[in-house]
Image (tube, rainbow, N blue to C red; front, side):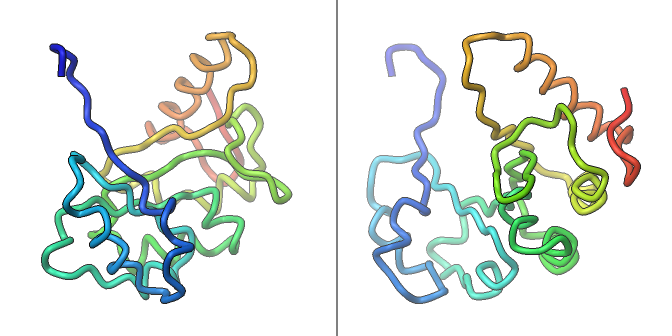
Length: 163
């Protein structure tokens, strides 16, 4: 690894078209024997998570919740997923979603979005900031990191984000 400290992981989402079953566990068999340190298992809806039954050999891989995709499915979806699968969620992909667009920054999230994602603020897991930054400018990136840290330090409620 040339002295670098990194992990190479693969998103199972890249293979979803290979199987029509809602249980995607069999897709892990395609990549289980590859030289990878991780596999990303992301669930956008409660139905996907309910249908996903990890076999014993695949239980080591992370399970993720993408809040933006869940919210786009339903304003109640994040709460429903967290209520039912709190102990199985190991990673949250965190980004804003608004009017059919996702991977947005939290520079001005709607009150309804902040209210809908409240349940993730109490999870004990890795938070992955997953927004698009189209211009080479570190100021918006730094601002976004501050926004996310502010939210997870309890300064976001259904009234919005406060600094």
